[in-house]
Length: 379
Image 1 (cartoon, rainbow, N blue to C red):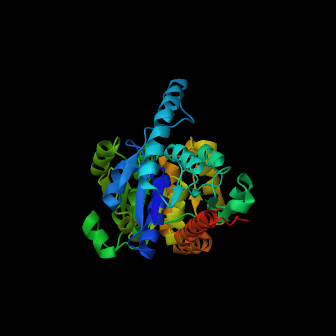
Image 2: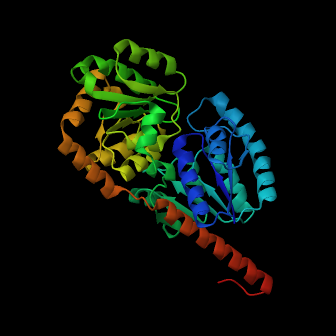
Image 3: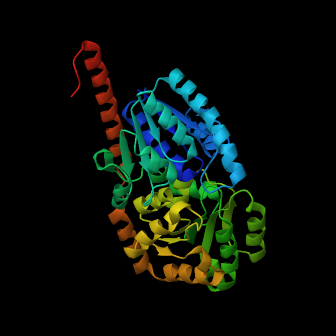
């Protein structure tokens, strides 16, 4: 089978696509997976490292940008139509799967018009603009939360959960200590603000050092800063003499997770799928400008069931963050309860469900073609 996985821009959109690709390969190594994205999205860096080919569209985001950027986006959309048509005619996929982001919109619509089987993944409680529009046309919609079903046609919508990459589950403790050069037997805090980092979280961590001095010798950090804040945050750790490994981007997330006692992060749906699948206690700081405020909606859902703590970005301070860190550090029972709550809502078999649905669509499509060629009308 040939499968196109389209979308990206951020890790939150891309990583579920990689998880689906892994499941297709797990079932049959001969399955061909081709990613489609943009040259300026995270997919241009990550997909080649994962060993998959990638083709690029000339596309830019339309929602939440200036008028000037909207005009530029509309112009590029014309180019993206031609790019999409050329990719589809050359690859001739058995199915096109959209994982979200503006790179998925045009090619999914062209695939629909060309009668290729299509499906989308919706990671968030409240669907984004692109997926909300695509949901009217595609053959199947795979959702993460039951509450999302009201936004899509019920007959084509399936509650699968959000696919999680295999490497997240396969982190090696021994490899982690070698990769990150961290100390054993220290309370380890994983900090990241999405694939590009998060300045408010980065600065809050540095400010929190002033309130964590009493446990300074007992904790260490694995901190993904994003490229723009890397040098400043690295120097701040050195000046404060707190232990940790600082990196612009962490590719070995399985290893980062496996040695972490708690996680401090944004509340993107893919991050939450990873955290809940692994049962990691977390302090979530939702990105305040996410479309439809979906990150806060995601985080509140976990907070309500006791699976996570949440601090809104506007309420974030070093003192408040340090207080939540200490609460989790000193209270092992709380951490254990949060782990149980996480696992109770996790869906570790999401990739399998998504691929099952995709294969069913492919088989139905081929059956229709066979009936059409034989002159038998499809019911």
